[in-house]
Picture 1 (cartoon, rainbow, N blue to C red):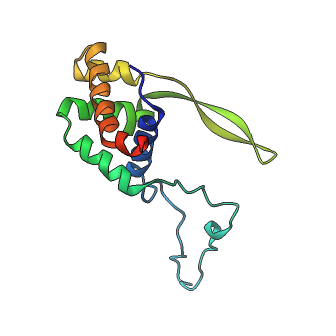
Picture 2: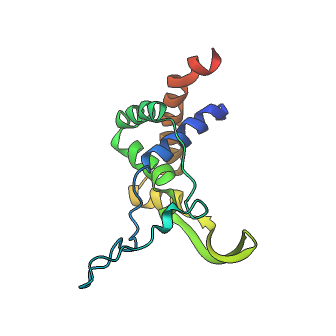
Length: 151
């Protein structure tokens, strides 16, 4: 079934909202822990060119989608995690080089995904059950926002 584009937009907004917060990756120490104790590391992140782009999302609308997610069955929530919130965990990635600001740099490139196959195997469900769980969620998102979009 085809859904209006606003359904996908609301789901993508919700995904960005789910991943908001501090990055879990390790960071460089902010100060020296040696005997000098007075040395502070330069604040490289304040350089405007080095800052990663901010992910912009509408928290109010994402919270409404979260309420829908919370009311879904356990199976549907697990399928949604495979399909949306943890999707990169089940994709296949290869290391490549890409051009960025005139210089080549290493980058990870997605070459395929196995999330549907993994979800069906892990959750012991059929392709139709997987699709039904996704449709159930999309229908609820559509119902939640259809009056606002049509107005």
